[in-house]
Length: 545
Image (cartoon, rainbow, N blue to C red; front, side):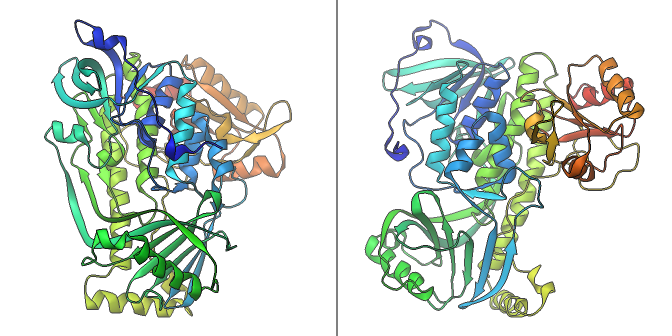
């Protein structure tokens, strides 16, 4: 088995370093974490060559981001590595909330039946990065350069010139577009004189990976003010390889250096295990870290030819698993737009919609993350009294459970107000509004085999879903053909419970058509479209309208 934490990638000299003038590339991505790697793979699948620079030659140290949401897994499926993630990760859907030492609330995130992917998997970040690196290595359009740190940037009308520091000296690269995916301490953000603004939380948390010979249910456990860690909160999650993630709230006055020492971590973990009936169970401490956090973002995610994604653009608290998931969804949004612009299929203005859509998503994530943090770590006696009263009521009253917030978990943002959407001209019910990420469902293919709706969508093109059979469905198919746009058509037809589920999720009738962007977000829908409707909607989605 590969030890992804100990991998070291070789620095290799590139011909660009010997060029008399800066070599020109369509896209340069800075940062080979989950966001930069996902973006690079996505662009390569769209036939756009990419240079990916990383200032290090290793993968993530420690488990770090571990909770990957259903929508992120669907993106990994499209990139060609979702199966590996799910097979290795720990799938879960049940969460339990405790007040003192008593369970007060249980929730189930399992989507309704008929989804290929679980609500969440827990998988250490170094596995996610390792699988993405291995996927990138299969794509010849990705040029991944390790030990290559960007130390300067000069913006021009036709791109940006980067200064790259390597073990053999500096060289320069010309990029038509630059994607800054270089993390919360983004060097590119500093080089451009930008900053992320928001709220810094005056609290400290210890996170530790522990391995132990104990068989606990695969579920998320969160304690408020337990006897084994009074006055604070604790979170316990299972990961791959029999490893567990435990988070201990410490308070602002805790000494980060002291709290990271094994002799101080051990009694905390021992008290937790003893309290849940695992007295005497042996455990080993792996990686540990003490962190503080902020909920903040850059004012604008686009600065000329530089586009910011992931933690370089926005940061949230870890409660709700919104960091890595929102970053991968940034990449999902940006890739198809960059590809369309680079290929000349769309105007540069399409990239402005990346900024506006993902700034909106960041605001939603920050809002939810801040609310969770305020509930978990009340900063006044009045706030603490309110929280504790809610938790007491939760044991007996269902209404109070809606107020409990131990980290409302990540879901895909609905881009309702996107300028790329075409407004409904007819009445539809349900949640598949323009701007929503398409819902999965079982489908029956033309040859009678079964599959999943999102798997049938095209990896890099606009997809049209056509529902039903008969004359109205045939007219819709003809309208799509007459639009003269290279759409990938998925015909959801036939009978049976599987097709009925897809039909119900999309409030479809015979002839209903949904137009999906290449990132699988709905951008238009009709009961009976015309070729002109379809052409106009595609033009709007490409920022040509």
